[in-house]
Length: 173
Image (cartoon, rainbow, N blue to C red; front, side, top):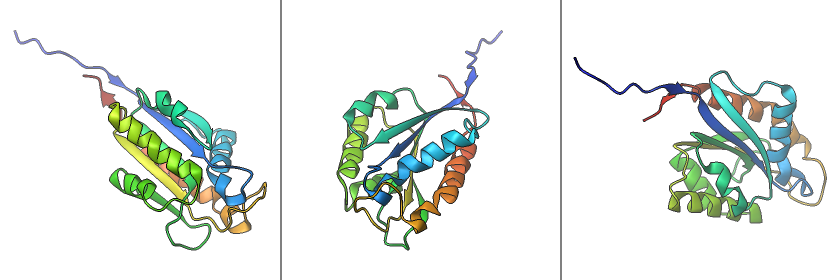
């Protein structure tokens, strides 16, 4: 009789991290998007355990939150030379390249540092994405510009789509 080790399926564990400075208009869009998602009560997606985190201006103190997750979705203002309010998902290595490119704010440096520290400690999530929203202004202001505020629903749909695609249970080894 052949004996095989059976593995139990578990739910995908995801961290949804909104970052940005809400005192600098469009720079805070990541925080506004995750607040919108959290208020919508659409989270978590079926088959996914989702932790929602307002990362603010981010720091290495968030490294512990990258432990034992399968997926990381970061929502942030991101410069990718598009019209203000454009939304784009950068997956895996594309996320790494986008985060490692030209930086316009301190928290983008901190995000690159966080991902670098995660790599050094073996905590890089196997699935990761940056949902970037092209900013118009990062001047002082408590609200995003009209074009960027109008992108919130599309950014929310992008996050939900990614969570849906990543909800397939993983086998424990």
